[in-house]
Image 1 (tube, rainbow, N blue to C red):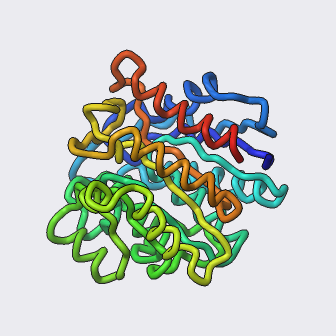
Image 2 (cartoon, helix red, strand yellow):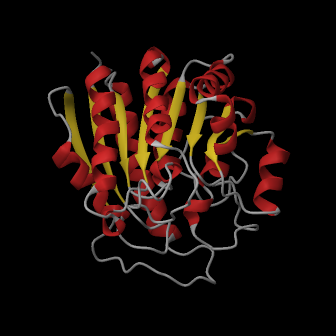
Length: 291
């Protein structure tokens, strides 16, 4: 068994809907703690008033970066102590810190971005102005401005980056960004057509080709919103539970390659009968019990 640190990244600064910042504490209350070395909680400034202006594409930017700087250093500390850091979001901007901390440590990693959305907008192409639509572009260095000044190291190579389970990519600009970068996209439709095992193998082959390991960022909105409603930006026609758990099972079979992991975008304020909470807890316990 590997020693695991749980890092609670309690931020929803990247999205104009409240609630994802409350997720880590709820999940920590549920998970098996027998294999956990340490639990660390990071909050943003309690006196900060979150901004919601849809016309400001850099809203909450300074506070978000202050938060991610703290998270980045915490993940690096965990890695330096030879732990497996599991970062619990929070919205998907927390991955800017967690994944870049991991590649800072290991220098050359692949990344699987498990998400219904592309998260590959730039500050010039975003429609919503919500920064949680930008982080995949940030960690691959496609959008280097503003979001990673705290990082001292490489970015993820486009050729070793996979967007997995996508079904809601902004057209035309975000899709053009992904194509220009050469990111491999495995859609929900691909998974339904070819099967979760085959698509996992394809993704893992790409992200391990010439790298020293993998960072996995698992956004639970990849799961169909009719099954898992408790997210900030739900999308229908997603993965079923067999497929969502199947990815985790494949990950466990390749656990020696996994250097760091995130679970993000659970929003308990949008949940129904704790359905999403139970699924997110199951995912985490699968990893904790089998790593």
